[in-house]
Length: 535
Image (cartoon, rainbow, N blue to C red; front, side, top):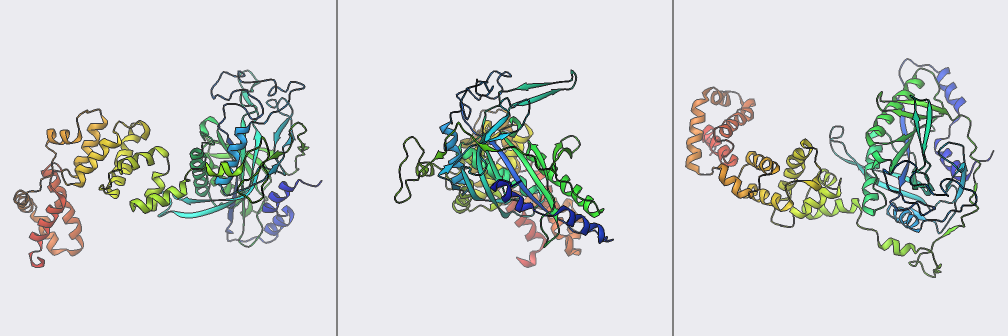
């Protein structure tokens, strides 16, 4: 049977003869374990932000009572016809342009036939050979502080973006041995974004999803709440040896968190590697991820290609768009202008990172963290409206100290009890040398707990001002040196331990003054007294 064009394209990415692959492994056993290279492709289903469904005016409110948002079309009543939601088309075009895709001026809808209880019509309206957009590319930074020393840039091609309707939801009641169906989700507008297999591990997949979420939320295309099912991921995973065609892939369906994506990919790579190293053959199948066991589980065999009996959707005419930026364009009444949508695209996350790195002279790691959520970036930029503030100090206090307090209380930056204005006053106190960092932390905690006084008033009331009087600090240092003769002797007799001794002396000064001694002056005095010959 001849496959549709899109299926042929995707198969070419993964093509490999199962028989020749398995024979190669079996006929050439080796004591040494082979090195396998993973290849991952993602298919991401994004629920479009729309007040109504893609082919009817039925509302799409999340959390509504079961089967309360079902119209005659979603219930597949005879004679009902689909009417395409214009806003869904606009969002799909905007997303395609933001991802560097070619928007196809003519696209078509198809019927994908399969039987399932939550699909009353017995088919899904989707796009196959003529999607709304194709041939794009997404660049993103891969960075996880627990895994990588520094970020690196990676890119993956986009095969296509297609519009389609979602199916309902089946709820399996194991206690009463029955299956319940909720059709609220049936007809929800979806974009399926198909990425070519260009990823090599779970961290790269996680970075791609995070970047896509940032883009989609900035466009207003979707809320991307994976816990609500607004963004679901299917991962296609295979392993092969360098210089050889891609191996047999497995598809892990419906991954509903970034953590699940990483864990499922890591497990599947290890599972396939073990099979091949033991002389076995990876089976082309669909699997699901068991979050409790942190492993993938077989769902169904895909060795035999399922025939979905695709056919053109007879009740929807071809979707036609035009671009007024092109010379000699022809306007199509009632259709959308690609140029108008292009002009409405806001600054995208990658451009934002470049901008704040240039303006505020901050490193890439901090720029990645700041753009990880719109609320965090907005907070930072409000604080930095006073251009005299040191951006490095602001980033350190915000991304390390304030975020730690928010994490401890399980609060979001958007509901932070310390406003950007007040946070800026705290930055000013430390930047001017009025308080040391240790007391900055105390000040943050005081304000976090609801103290309504100004930062300056709290510092005054608690006598947290930095001690910077040279005479007072001179006397302090003399006393500490006299009380720590062993440390002084170690400083002079063991050059390798000078840094550690100095740190111990500095710590003693902090304890003696309750963190009020100005560190730079204290260190200068200690250095002068311990090595007078260098002064």
